Image (cartoon, rainbow, N blue to C red; front, side, top):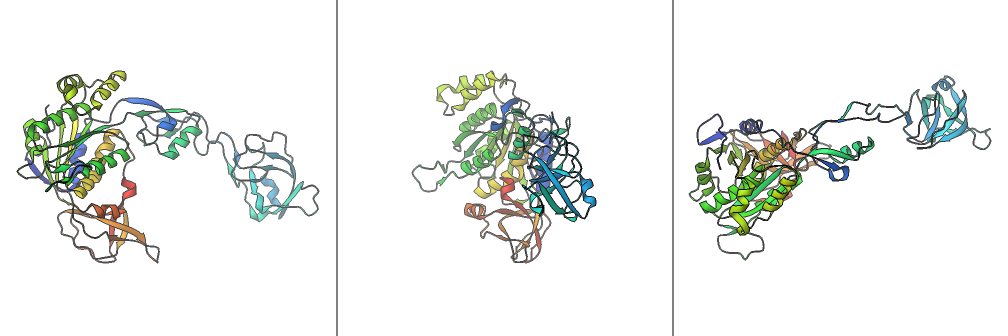
Length: 463
């Protein structure tokens, strides 16, 4: 396996701002592009998948002029009188149009979505019209002309989408509204990019699987679950490689396995400057993987690179039945079925995160998430940064970007205010549970006073 990524700077350990990290990651990923394989899925199975190509509208939407509400359809020339009285000559239902001629002084009772009868251009809402006092059998209505304007409550043919226009652009993640739009065009299936495969493992002799008996000095593996939860929320295919001890041979074996199976290899732990950080030493021997010190808190160390994988055939042969990772054969079979050769697979992207739980999550949200969306071919993954007033004084040292776990709410004046969740240590995972946003204190910013505006990222938008 050979790491082939070589960023512009040659130093082994660089100190970068968060913006520089995003720029370097973009430079790394741009030559790779998004996963190329496309599959066609029924709409009901395409939720959150990335659209592979533009969808052109095969029909006008709506396909005909129709009423936007229940009421009475008539021609706007009747509005010349101050009080309008019209004879009701029929009813137009959704799916059952009124096709007979409508003369001046006449109207048609119409339901929402029903086709507008020929020659009519305005709808008066049902509740704004009353039965004329001298009418028999409810066959006349009367209303004030000032209560409606010409063309009111009319939806025109093609006003939403015109035939031949781009209904959905390639790169969109298909949310529920997008699926509904595709269905409204009469489409039963859609072409989407295949799921990005991300292999994950935690590192460390001190890591225990949940359910194992506790031992002195050991901790349970929370990162494996929080990070895989974040991965699944993005809709990627997660390959769980478990926990790897601090043993060079075990790390090398797991890296070969991960790089052969996945588009991205994600790890947590073992990339700081400690003596037992075998992940760092191993990757340096495998190739010019970069280790960055990021000017941020929480989350300082970050490892990035590209790993040339072993073919799935040689991997399966070398591991045989001894491998504890069952998806090897499953994915290999899948690749043969879909003509997706792992032997010719492009390099796997390596992303190594810090081991502290909150640092790992924040680093994921800031760096791994945009990287994965890029590889997925997703063009609409940006999360808006909004402003809120700080409810407290926040201490901040210029020269690094800080991400504080916060709770945003509206005050009595309807303004968005935000407060921290308390202790902000990178191992205090309970404060992440309590948060509904991240406060972003920019690189050069100093202390924040109560009432000052701060930038926030809503976690529901990120996750």
